Image (tube, rainbow, N blue to C red; front, side):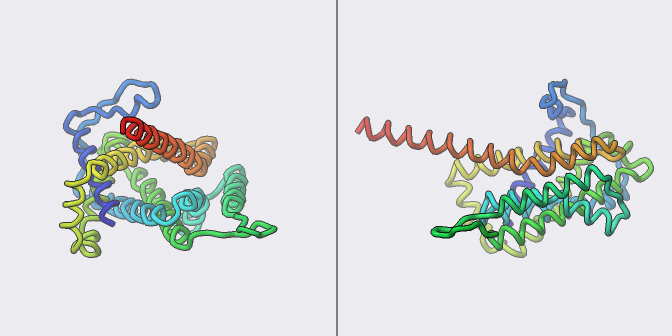
Length: 280
């Protein structure tokens, strides 16, 4: 819980920096010029309505961290089923309808998740469903919170004048992450507050821990802001289909990047070790 809260703390600091410099560089990823990001002119009521979105965002992130703490690869496989749960929550709780192309794509996602969960044990002649229970439980919990967050966020921005007062999706997402951090702090202190002093000492002593906290927090913010911008209210059915595909395929993309990163780190470590041995 401490790690997920500190990552959201990095997100909150980054959001405040964007408001301070009044510039958001996220559009550079789309080969466009950075956009201005002024302070949102929201009311207290707007912030109160954003609290459920921020709380669900915090819960989804914490659950994802717990899921990846068990089996990172299987955790990403479980999270690939997020569009399925989002569709179920949307239909059951928010009266949303699913288009036929989107429903067909959801069936492919279910089949893909089931296929990816098949494993062949040592000495076994056939494949069986095998999974890490912790990763499955927390992954599904993360998907549930993410589904509610998406539906609540869509309903929030559809309220008259709310989107205009936020002044853009970048502002609304930044405010959500600040609220998510504020919601996580009490939970962190209640569950792991006794270990806070030890965590601070670890952060002071380990440069790698400091770097990983900051890098993972920034990566989480940038990735989710792009995803947030893709899922704007009022999208066409084609755009909805693309967002569903994006939500389903991004865990696979993350696994590829994770694999490449691990290869680079291992190769670098081996090279350093070989260099040290050679010098000795």
